[in-house]
Image (cartoon, rainbow, N blue to C red; front, top):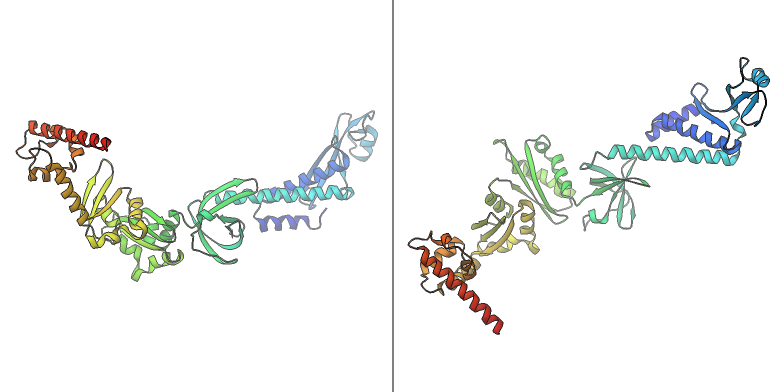
Length: 420
């Protein structure tokens, strides 16, 4: 057999991280296939690795008989006792060792292919087992090559892939360059395990902060939520149960060192660190940072807020191309409508003017209805009298008249609209 086979098995197992037994089983299967190619499919053969001899031994089994019907399957009693086992009896099955050096070139080539395939399969299984439970982890590697826009990453014994959809649009990598990414998914496909990596997933930002801020990994600070527009800007919400710890300060670090390490890894992505609050108004106002909020009108049922900011803060609150408010919505889970004081005042004046068109409606009552949420004639028409009798000095009969009149005005407007 192969010289120093025992040493080769040990070395291959160590180099490829494969159980020695898998290599031995592959060798046995390969020799069995080679033997069948030489002797034919109908013969009874077995292959066993002999650790002491350091070789794979192949045995052909024949039954002891008085009369031979098939020389490949039978051996005469006299011959068996003389050459194989002096105590042999008819019906016994005896193993005859075969000289493996007599196997032809094609048989040996087939055996090699089987060994290579079995070892590859074992390597793939090992890689899958190693990575299948590592989803959500950070990993380092080197850019190996590019395939159709995807980055193929050398992770050591395995390869990872960063698809185009998981790459930050402005990042450019060269072969051999170090790359850090987030294990998004580990799939088992026919070619072997596929390790999908990401640099755009919010989990990547979360994992980077867990590395940079020990208080997060120790559980002293909780990273509640992450909102990202990869390569541009991100917001994270943090909180702590320990009153002695400033969660925002801990994430920023001394002179911004911790957050700067994350920004550097993300090649300049701007990061806002927001203190989380159980009070949704407070949380939303913090999420809109750095803009200052004047007042908030909250609609809890629809999880929406109307945010009123000073005129000079509107562009800051909305952000470039709506980015700041968009990230705040993702971070908090609330619908946010940002308006300026001037716009709200204008809308209030217009709404109150509409309400003033209802017979018997005073300016004071129109203002109070507006404050109650009945900001248009249509809103008042849909109201129940009992909903507005809370207004001082207003009885249910007057309320019903206003509602009826509001309904009539809506109908008139609709008819007039059709006429046009």
